[in-house]
Image (cartoon, rainbow, N blue to C red):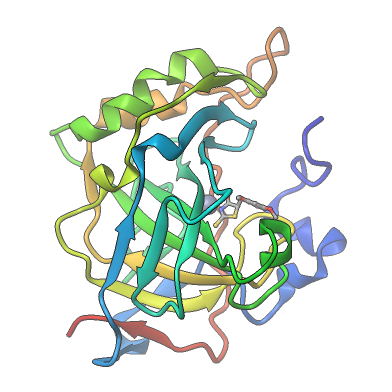
Length: 258
Ligand SMILES: COc1ccc(C[C@H]2SC(=S)NC2=O)c(OC)c1
Ligand SMILES: [Zn+2]
């Protein structure tokens, strides 16, 4: 059963999730004029165990890879984070064409897509407790930029798409270290925000990488070949699963680079 909010657009979410109109919502526009360079920001580090990868699934909203997060097996640390955060899952946001699809927008630039690697703070007893805490979740966000050259490291994920075409489909997905997807530069912006879908909890320390990863138009088309409907239901293409940018209000966006 699709989440009951899924048929209503983002402007309606606040009716069931008042926090959707909160002061710390995501995504936001990142504009140089509002960004503050913070030279005290540390570099971030991901130490992921390829053996932690478990399955890939289509939940009708995105393509998600889930990882074993029963101990500090694959972790993100450093940057703005107070300690290690456990990798729980990664997923994507994309558009109906290459000229849009990312959630964050940088100096007016929309990218074709955005990869989210979602981690939770193990100082809390479990993930669901962490989503209720301001420092509970850390998301590493990486833009997908379309150029002529495909990103070979995306092949593994895109090869599985045929096995998870419709909502609810899941396939084993093992021996995968997501850090092979990272761009060269670790430069990032960071700010406090929220989940970009209901329940829109304001529990996320965002780490948004400045350097996009380059994918091909065919690779984006592969993501767009996913369906949001279940098998033997009318075909509904899974596209435009991004939330529009939200007001920044009085939040500081810090940059790790000048
Ligand atoms: C409370 O549980 C949730 C709620 C929403 C999402 C998905 C959202 S959050 C994000 S960032 N991007 C997305 O698409 C979850 O993803 C793990 C988990
Ligand atoms: Zn996301």
